[in-house]
Length: 236
Length: 236
DNA sequence: TAGTGGTCTAGACCACTCC
DNA sequence: GAGTGGTCTAGACCACTAA
Image (spheres, rainbow over the protein chains, first blue to last red):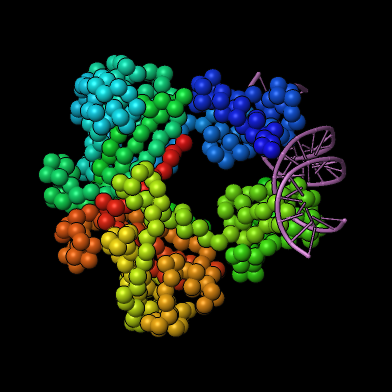
């Protein structure tokens, strides 16, 4: 018998309200007693459901204030990389510039990644990342043009965290990303731009970004100088 | 005032018993009612403490059986990599061979990583990993020789998961690893061994392995063909 | 059948935030 | 002071495991 625990039902209720966009990042959700009454369960059960969602980082809580829907945490990106050399895993600020943006039809490969018709109009953006004025990464990103109309305007300044702008200006919440990391050898053009030699190693991060309802909105490839990036973790 | 919640005290009690080696991987810990009595708290508090440690994957539970100390989970290694090409993130078995092992004094760099005196005797091991008979990774590892006496014997077969042998044969539990991932270009020798060209990209994983009490026991560098490895994750 | 963990409830008291 | 989440307790009932 597939018996679903009550707290799972509560979790799913909240998950759906977030996934559907009824609750968006930063929103205050109803309090424990309120939810308990609404759903006809005890406060302890609501607490357990919320605890689980907090562990998943879908929600966060502040004593005395309430429970909020999380903003996506890019500190968990694989490019939460640490600069090499500078004493053991210290986070380093990467400044980003946006030298190029242009509307064009999406290449077949990209359309497929985003699950849209081949030839769909895309906004193509190229960015460069600097650590203390030295270029260390290059980023190419394709957005579904219809979702971010006006982002192609060169007068619109793009902040370091592009997603903040997309959420605020276009009302498209960024909910989730899938990332794949690998390495490749630099081609001539990339090498020139990053001041390294041809075939020097690059770390390559491919990212698909999703908004609510599981819709993909962006595909992005970031290439970073391998001598400037590494990734650390603990296993237990 | 720094008030420590009771369940934290319980967590720390269990953590200490594990860290000290009084409880080792696979052991059954006392039941909830037993711990509650021992420590003079309610069963709910014990349950909360254990839940937290389960979330950290330090423990795992089986309904009807009990609560156990986790074995280290190498599926969480960054080299829980997936082979490319073979349909989307399917795990692939990597067969390992051990062509070389030798006792020698540790290079200064390695001794420092392991926190031992320069010149300490080490067991140096070279291994190669194959996917369907194609060599895809090379591994160099340095062990503190005194801890694994006899491992240098060529007649002693080394299984794919070396750590299993170390735990069983030498009674040295593997408790934790720290990993750093980056990329580099293949040198001539590595390229030859992996059947790639000089300067082709490699993913490089550096790992320090620890036993109980925070003592480092191994330093390892694994180099894999970038075209055969990638790493995936989700961020939320 | 006895012992384990898993779910759920009800209620007490505390600490923090805001008005 | 009213409302929020955080901690802690006590106890009921269920599901799974082992003998």
